[in-house]
Every structure is written in structure tokens, then in C-alpha cells.
Length: 408
Image (cartoon, rainbow, N blue to C red):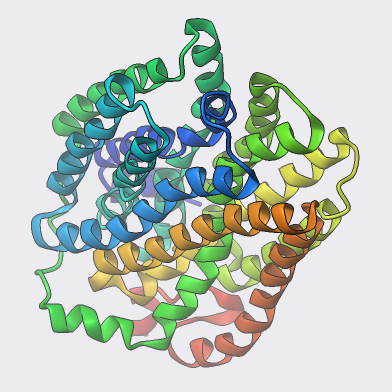
């Protein structure tokens, strides 16, 4: 990769702003994941209820990504991001000062989905500044903002334990989002290449295209797997291995780091070797690792297996979004919202699958086997669809065609 070419081809302040916005939003989006282990000391919940609490923010994010994706195409990603951050402050204030029942926490959880919807504005803000040959890296860097999850799993339960209250964690979360809002407002700039807003019927036509749904399925497994695991692993380690709230979150952090920081690597490798090739390998790795996890091995081995699985999911996120902007360059805002919503839905169902199977069978094994089967099924799907892709918009070896290649 030509480093100087990459730096000169886009707008670095906007790329940084996109990363920071995504990072702090992700941190807030998954706040209830590790905190659930602390919250259940105040509200007794069974396995399914705990899974539901941590899944609700992901559901909210899935739905609202469609809204923010639509706004991104109409008013631009910068203004959409500013509005998103202001609204995100509402559930933080509510959780800090007012939430005193499980029912109120469910409302706060859904409203935290606004933070998860940041995806639909942050990625187009970065993507529209960069040419096709740098899409994988640019989207990978912006998407690495999911590293905000690490701050949540590492510090949320420690803060709650230190102050003797999980409410105060919501108050602390207000500090970074206010800072990022100011930085974002100063540095971010909409690309001059932003396409003209489409009509609603144009967006409906996107949903009628098979490729849209293929990307939705792929991303629901990679991103959905990552965010679902990130939200649920603290509960899993606490329940399965009897770890304390802080210790369970620490082990979850180790696994989350893999999915967070390897996303740009996935985008870069997809630029180099092709998104299709990368996804074949990554879905295989994830499927095999989850099958091994289903045996519920000793803690040390379990962390290693989940680390590799989460790394594969993170790299898969970068690989999927190396392809998406090439296929839907002029509709990237709404497509990002649609595909991101599908990813969120995957993250919503993952905790539900694990929690419900644990409640029903008394073991996590069936749940992990189901997840493994879904990942491996994606390989079969890609084998089928890539035949048509190579005839239309994919080049040799699964690399997305650039505009220069198409012109030649």
C-alpha cells in the first residue's frame, strides 16, 4: 500500500473524527454488557432476562441505523453525527440520575441504541473522502472505533465497584462523549463527493437487490457476532466460570481486543488479497473456533479460542466493508444503515440464543454449536453468490474493481 497516496487521497481530520465518534459511541452502546453482572445484584434475573437486557441496546441500534443512514444521505454525515451524539446523552443522564427500576432500565437500554446507530454516519463520513483502492483501509480505520468496547469492559465494573453504584458509570460516560462532540464539530467535514439525496423509492429499490441481502447476512454474522459477544461475554464468564464482575469483564476485554483492533487489518488484507478470499478464510476460522468453544474447555483455553474467533469476526467486518462501498458507491449512506442494521440484529439474536439455550438446556454448548453452524453456512452462501459477482463487479481473486479497471 502507498502510505503517502492514502494520506493525500482523503481528509485525515474527517477520518480521525469518524474514528473518535464511532469509538465513544461504541463504548456507550455496550455499557450494559459488563454492568449487567453488577445490576443483577439489585434486580434478580434468570439467564434469558440477562440476555434480553444486554440485547436491547443492540436492537435499538439496529432500528435507528436505518434512520441515521437516511439522514446521512439527506443532511450529511457530519450533522447526522452531531445530532446522534446529542441524543445519546439522554439515556446517559437518565441512567445516571433517574433509572431505579428494571422497566426503566429497559427503556434506557433501547435509547442507548442511538449510540450504536453511529455506524450509519461515521463510516460514510470516512468512506466518501477516499477512492476505491483505499476503501478497505479507510473503512477499517474508521470501523476500528469498535475498540471503544474495550474501555467499557475494562473500566465500567471497576468504576461501579469503586463508587458502590452502577448509576455513576452512566455519569462518567458523559465526559468522553461531550469531548468528542466538540472535537468532531471542529474537525469533521463532509466530502464534496457526497451524492445528491435520493427519493424514498430509490432506497426501496436497493432493498429489492439480492446483493443488499447477501451483505446483510454476512455482516450479521461478523459484526453481529462481535458486538453480541462483546455484550454477553462478561455474563458468560461470570455464569460459566464463577468469576467476579470485574474479573469476568477483564477476560471479556481480552477477547474484545481481538475483534476491535484487527478490523483495520481485515480491511487492509481485503484490499491486498480480495474480500471474497478473506471472507472464505475468516468464516471458516470463526465456525471452527465456535465449535471448539461449545465443548466449554478450561478457562485459559476458552479465552484463547474466543480470542481467535473474535479476531476473525473483527477482520471479517473490515473485509465486508471493503466490498460494500464498491458495490453501492452512490448509496453508501443508506446501504451502510441497512447492512449495519442487519449486523445489529445479528448482535441482538446472539445473546438471546446463548441465554435461552442456557435456560432451556442448562448448558451453553447447544448455543455455540448453532452459532458455529451459521458461520460455516456463510461459506456456502459466498461460494454461490461470488459466481455472479465475478461476472459483474468483482475482479480476479475477489478484489473489487476500481473505476480505472472498469474504464479499461
